[in-house]
Image (cartoon, rainbow, N blue to C red; front, top):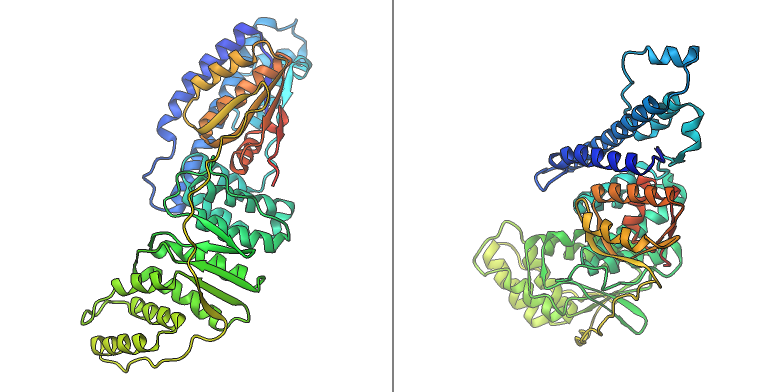
Length: 456
């Protein structure tokens, strides 16, 4: 993309024109309605395409206006262009350079800032845009598929870091911790740590470390959504001698959760690596409360999980009593008692500890701070940023507390960076999370400003 450096009046006119045109995109932004991943991806694609088209129209229109005011005496080539009935419609901002050069000649190149297209793989672009527009689940699915894609090359690490930050932004600490175990085994390095300032309030998340072994802690209510967490534990277990899970906080579960937990226990029964089950009593009580003697549920998973929990606890008599109730309910032979085996053993539940207060990150010296979710046109933030940058040659924007930036807001921020660069200012963005960082790459902000990446 090429953004011409107009004079003050032209920049103001262009900004007003762009604001008027961008207002038309409000109805195009994806909302909570689409029911399928394909529909949500299409909605995000249409949003990006609409904004790109409007951006291009604004650039081309401003270039035409400037050409009309400052056109030199026409030579043969210029006269031929003047006779053309219309200006070709620019389909994407990347083509705006060609349009501006054709209209303004070499003068356009002397007054332009080049913004290269994104070099990100398409799957990471898609995930960044989906997340920016509030579609976290489709973004998670896209990133999960990208983890095993060897074709990403050096961008594969970024896919892992984006997914870790997505779990963090959603407050999903169990999934974060499980994926962090996989990350450590995959890259043989320490994974990012949990940051309370970036995470949404976590209703189902905490993790502990006991004797150097990370414990994956399950939330209070379990349902079929724990499938991804179980998958992560199973995948990471192949590279760990011992895995620890904690059910001490569990109070209720359904048949879907029971099926996935049975799969977890079955995996470790056949695995050479160990599983330590903390809070097995709470797991048994929750499974027992989900079933009722004489009631034939469509799935027997709740019964089987309760029996497996008794095996973990080594309570043979209670196992045989419950197996008789199962036999009467389903009119089948009762399961027979077998020790759980040496690979799985019960452990003591962790004692809950009050979380230590976490102070917000101290802002960079003389930095403008962006925090939380930046949505919509971010007019208030931009007004404050302009005031902050007014008397500074170097503008530092602290993004360490920034959770999400909507696509439209990122477009406005890009325009503001262009304006600051045209005024001779240098811009630095400090440690955005990797989802916001990827969005900045999609927008081309890295070509105009320095982005200091967060340390692992």
